[in-house]
Image 1 (cartoon, one colour):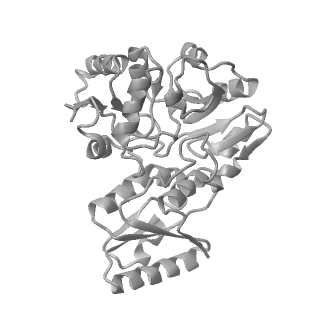
Image 2 (cartoon, one colour):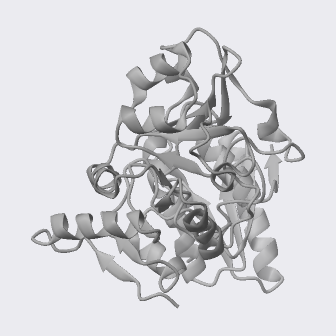
Length: 347
């Protein structure tokens, strides 16, 4: 059991605590920290022993590669063998920000970080605390989401404390995250941008920079070896079983109501995951809105927190509504699909 310190809550000591957290990373420790997407669990990406401690703390399968977070171009050149022109274009448009790019890895990056792959996933976070922490550590920082593996990703320090207190050296509290979903992961190694994981940067935004952007077919096929975090295993899952309905709004509401009634008659404690516009259509006491159907970015920010609220209510089954599968809605539906283990009914 580690003596976990919670840092960042006093503005007067923040700078000192950031330097101390950087020193913890530099000497091989674990620090959970905020990014603009979700909270990450950081370790020195070039220290194989420290990286292994990430997997142990999370209970994460070791064949699931990690994203390396950097604060400078110099750090990228240390860990990437080459930087294709497509990557340069994407970096110019979206870094710092919620975009991760795959590069051929240098020998400096241990295979523990890349799950045995010859590529390394890299991003430059757009969060002042994350940037300073990486800078003060003097290291590129490997950081998956700071949660117990498989649970909803953490968007508040309280989520990290719930999952990892006593398993990490420090937790840096930066308040609620802005995007609420993990970064988009893109592979440009074949000259075409292939989205391995949808996230905070949409395909529409990528197409404004590159002429050809596609989704990886492996997004729907979990039998392939993952090139990116989030491509394998059930992810983002609450304790309750999640059943999802998508399609025409009236049919979805009708199906959700009917399924909730059926489950409740069987003695289950049911939660309903919906949107603002449909809240009045359900009688359940345990109903939560992800946000307005007209604001998918709000839904993205609230999604994981909503799933964790259901955990706190000891719900048995969550019956939820899907949203339109466009823009960041693609990433939202990817997370909901993973959280439900594929239990999605299209109407």
